[in-house]
Length: 180
Figure (cartoon, rainbow, N blue to C red):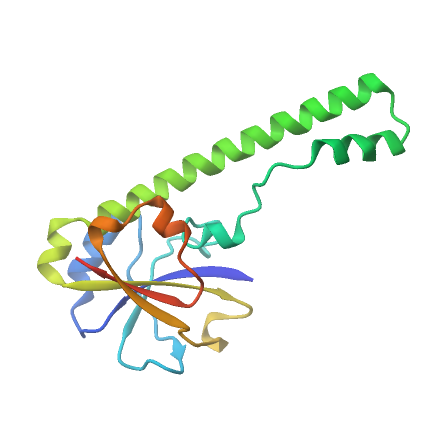
C-alpha cells in the first residue's frame, strides 16, 4: 500500500498560479481525476514530487511505528539465543542507538514537511487565489487509476489552527477544508 496526499478545490480554477506557489514549498500540484463515489464536484491535485507520499506527516498518528521497543522483551529474546551477557549488552546498546537515530531523522523530516504545509497554506498569494482548499490522503492498495475512494467525513478548519499535531491527526479519506 502507498499513501498519496491530495489538495482539493471546489472551484474550477487555473491551477498554474497555485502550482507555482506549491512548488516553492516542495509540493506538487498536478491535477488528477480520482474515482470518488460520493463527491464529483471537486478537483483533486497530487502533491507528491516522488513516487508516493509514504511516511508523510499527514495521518502519521495512525501509521506511526516509532514506539519504543520493549527492551526487556528484546533482552529475553537475546538470552534465549544463549548470547553472553556482554554480547547482549552490546546488541541492546546498538538497537537503542539505531532506534534513537531513526526517531531523530523521522522527527526532522516530520518538522520539515509540517513547515512546508503550514507555510504553503498561510501564503498570502494563495489567499488571493482561493478562499478554501482541502487536504485529503488515501492509502492505495493498487494503482491510482484503479482505486475507488469514498470520502468518509469532512470538516472545516481555519488556517491558523494548522500545525504539526493537526496534520498528524488527519484520518484517511477525511476531507479537511482549510479556510484560507
